[in-house]
Image (spheres, rainbow, N blue to C red):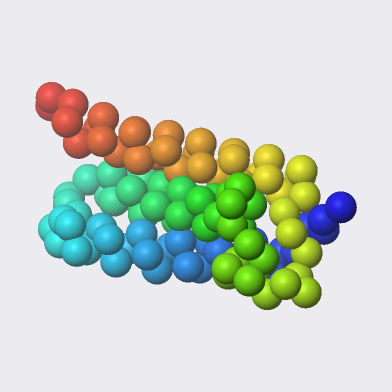
Length: 108
């Protein structure tokens, strides 16, 4: 019976944003210089939401032990509601990244 902690969610989104921007700059340094701002914002927010969602679900992967969680053991674990929110976040992030890729590759 876990609780939903907004501090934990915010922590994962901050970590997801940092990791996403780092990976974007490392793999494609000219990404943020693109003239189509819609692509830039879709990639940025897609990486933030995808990274935050994945980070939030990492602690509930079967086979991990409480001492390997990023969240301290005294913090509440993911409830069904928070798992649903994190899953929706992953889906939204993937959709934003797919939209950015489509817009980048679309002719014209």
